[in-house]
Image (tube, rainbow, N blue to C red):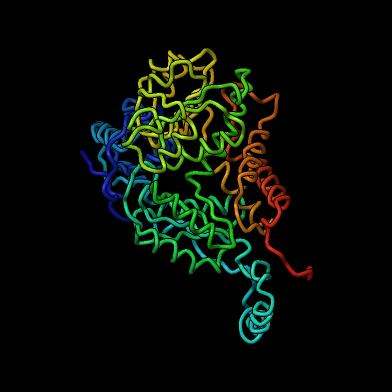
Length: 493
């Protein structure tokens, strides 16, 4: 079998294998360069081979035509890395066709990183230089020394976010370290720019010491208008966020917690409209008591939920369970003061809503049969859901997940760009629960009454109304909160 060798570099150590996806994806897209004979039917046999292996052809380009044959580039998508190799093997097995090179298009996209710095002002003449740099820049520096409240207005601080990680909880990959986390952090920064026109920069820290992380972020904070904590493992992330919020005069937002919570609450609001239930009446079961689960529970309770149970590896979290960490015990006290015990199937009996942010396949779909009629199921573990979302549809009226190949994708990009746009525009100094609730309500409201159905409870990430609606709601909420925003001078220029 021909090895897949990206033109740039070899892949990093692979993550544990996951189940084959239901459909092919551009994230496993390859371009295969083939040498074929001159038979006009060769191109047809090539396309057939890809299809017979379960791949999807997206392009066939003739690179070179010679009397003795063709050089052809075939671009196709697969369901996972192993499937890509199966497709290549199928092409190599076609008569009179030989594989010359295979390029992984995802690795090619990452060549040299995904970000760059660009100047917003022209630097073509001496006048340009004298204003943008010395000597003119000195006047601006002196003005800011006298009026530090204007740093946000006269520098990039007012539109810049630091995306900070220690690489300890990256996607579903776990503790892969700061260097290996960089493609994710770069992607996050690119999303900030694409969806909210915010300049963000990845800051990958080579430490998992809480004191060092807090002090480092504190030292770099003067250059940023907000801090987006990303992929930092629990329970360390809780302490880091709490200490930074206490020390800094700019908003600190842990997206794995609060971005996820906003999206879940928005999706749940609309899902409950579909099944004609009220948040304050439903029994909610959350699988996963880590960062995301804790934040989801907190926001649900803030929004009016009254019946929530949390399950984790210890079982249903109960305050009298001596195995629980301090953070999980606190979560148990808030959700299960009566000390109910059991496993996840036990918790699901009589439940109306299941929200999964735990691990792949922690439960079989059949266990959902114990839920109430018109159930809502959100399995969102990444990259493989907590329960098969396709099979879950046999037992639930509304199903949503983090997958892009199924309806109702719950994706944090629906929240964090608009949240930070609103925080920056309001010159917010902190993030308060009311702002998170406002973001969730605004996101839910993007789905209009005539659009709402079981397969459309959350808008597309490409809907331009999403970031605008969330930003406006967060900005309004921040300005209405006493002491939540920074002062400015009266100079309008």
